Length: 457
Image (cartoon, one colour):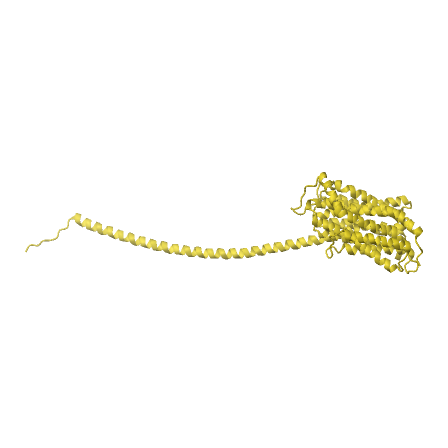
């Protein structure tokens, strides 16, 4: 039997072996691709998980940072509020002290009027107010060119010189020059600080007014204590109180907020700008003149009327309201009247935040009625005891102080910011006009009443 062996040639074997090798290589590649895909999928899953964890971590950090940021902002806001409140308190204290010391020399001259020129307190009043009248009438139109720090320094120097001249000169005319210097000091200081208040909180008006009212009490009481209770001479009394105006420099440069004062506020003296909303462009002369008439009708006329009536009472009528059968010495009646009047002024000037008055004509009319009543009493002598007169004088101070503080408070709340500084300055002439007219009347009224009054029992 013949065998039929299978024959393989090299080509067939190579082809079969090559196909198998290709298949194995293809299979390996598929496995490698599958492995790579699986690995890539795992890596992607890990990446997504890490990204999610990272996002959660970022959100947590953001939340913490946001909370910390809010806390920081709240802390900053709270610190800013505390700092602002502290500055406001300092400003109120500074304006009170400046009002107290600015009007102190003026009050002292009036309290010592009878000692300076006996029987002619009206002349002292004129010397104490006419310079202020002219200064207040002209200053709002040119005083803005003088930096505030220079104005305050001049006011202090004039006050110091006035006390020394009145204390140590025997010549009546030189004494009156000293009174004139006191007038320029208080008048210039009033214009300055009222204009400055337009750049501060509106309650600085109340603080300033309270200070000026306190000057009445402090001035009248200090002179009464030195001369009446301690029996010191007028010269010694005035010498003791001479250094007090220096405290106004302390209040202005150290207590009042803002570093603008050290730099003179600004080179052209237009006042300091503490808030970005405060306009810096000054009013033109045409705008200033246009504002005068509306200000005169709404604010100046009631204030002028009140001051005319009250100073006609103080200088023309009250020196003749004397009582023979009283515990108070007759020569001290006038000093007590001044003290009570200033007490009423102080109380009412401190009450604007409690009892504001919008109708400024009401206290003006009441003051005129009180003048007529006390004039008739000085002539006919129908009030039986001095206690009632004390009450009338105290009420006179209430009316005068209330009109003063409410006038400027209304300006600070009703007049536009850009016009406020000028308005404060120009309205301040109102009291000087009323006091000057009262002084002129008192020069004739006081001696006439003295010569024609009835004798009080």
